[in-house]
Image (tube, rainbow, N blue to C red):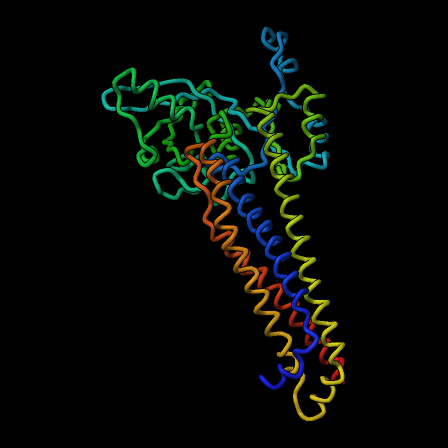
Length: 405
């Protein structure tokens, strides 16, 4: 191998090799930092929500004076089938789900110490595809997100602001104990459903908290069965919709459409727009880094191919005296593999040194935010190093094989 390298190392352009290293390191740092930033911003935009992914928009119709004073179903703010179909037709909307509300009266009862609380509540449900299948239940007890009318326990999801309102408002002012996340999942709750003729009792347990929905959720299968059993003659049109859209690809036209039709976006719509802008910006940054890396990749590849062309007579002679195609190829492949691995190793180390300044900014904005592990960058660097090396090795072997024959 040493003899082959001495014979074939002539005409090596060290300037081109150094240029490849520098350009590829710059591109690698941009790509890796961009990928890490995308992962962190995805967690940041989720707000720590374990139930709903980013990219969901909840819309409703505004409540008008007419709907306030009227009890007629046709005048209440609700979405028609045509309006739902128009939303589904938007290119930035992947799917549309309707909130299913309880058409019967519900009361909840719970005991906290010596205090007994009984109150009217409302329940809603959304299609299961909008709930993460692997969400972590509070209290660490894994509970399936499903229930029937015969189930012993009905899982529910409550807004985190309801939970905080009790802990820091009601409990503090009434001398009641605060409830931790671990205990919340074991807290007994009774649901009493009244269909006008009878009262049916169910046990309920909180299995999740959400930052994104201001409603109490139950599984869709339980809600549909309960409506059919306890309110068979009542069918209300959906008053709220949940839109699934990839925030990184969401078009500004989506929000323009919602504004034009007078739909209300729950939460801060400007936050959703900012989220869309940030995802687009990060996609552009990652794309620019890939352009640098691809340019460096082709620069090294062309340099090696030209070097093989210059040494094609030597390659042919070496093959004629008994050296195999793989042995000859290895002379060019080993330096290229070393260069690829070195570049992405340097790039990931540099990115890990530079990136904390960005994650620190997110922590300052949201003190409870915890960035993703930097293993995301390390894994991406490993994948790209292997991919680039394999492509280089394959092209070099094919070029050498062509000259040998």
